[in-house]
Length: 422
Image (tube, rainbow, N blue to C red):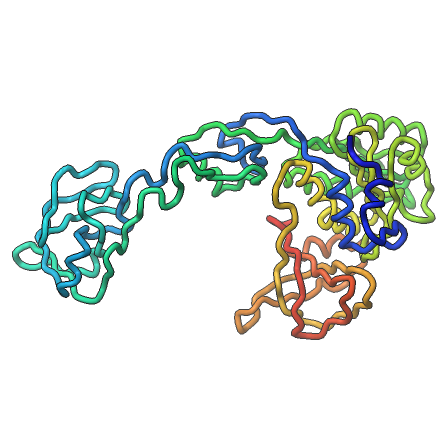
């Protein structure tokens, strides 16, 4: 049985839901969520973005034979000790077909890239480094090669019986190609994570509704939907739910019965109508946090039934920042992925930034390459939590850590790059 909010909190030293450092959020969520258990088999063409459910053991060695890495001439590299060589060409070895003859001292084989190395030969000289003599022999100058050069060894890429990919690997394009190179057509992956999402608030309009004073069109639903789709989740869109207890209760029940995780936006800030918070408390085991961060201070986490709950703030940028910083790694863990946190990029700041220690700030940044070739980052300008256009302009988030102070021009900062764009 999963640990309760109180049990998780007891494991974390200095846990204070009213002043929670951003670094502590990940540790809490690691204990809150668990990977899905169900496994399904999919074709390699359908495996992109899925998470491997078990180690994929290579049934063959790749490459299966020693082969040439170049178009050139194959010969016994021991002859290089004699200095410059003049070798008689005994035939041609083509890729996909083994040459059956023998090659002795003073002889070589013309060979194509990928062709199996004939028996007794271990070195390939690239064709462009040779000279063809009038009698047809090939001259190889001294000092260009070492024995064994330009030969690919059998099993150099993958060895038969060894894991080619590890359980928890999120399958990318290169992994799809690697799986196919082993002759494997189907792979076992964890099933897709089901995530239900809805926006809350009487002021939120769905697309197609007529505009009215004081109301805004719902953008959060579409940004969250896009981020979930990019992550490979099965998205259950429950639309906009008004601030009415009966409607909210029905939405939470529906979400918990359909999904592994529930994401909401709005209704978790201090001073807001507390119908959403009250319903979370009534139906689940939920903590309400004030995270020492900017933007995105309020957040609710917990469980309703068997579904993990992530209650995000209502401001558009705050929704995206809290999703990228906290929810995305938690969902990847639920998907069974082994690696959930991106490695930050280091870049020098192209501008001064004011920052007080005591909270983590996520500023929208644009990373470029400076005149000297080094990576440089600048903010997008206005960092207001409602300025959604700044997330379109940015290609990453500048992460100014909890204890960090002001940033001067030229200081190195961490950047959480947007994977594939936002």
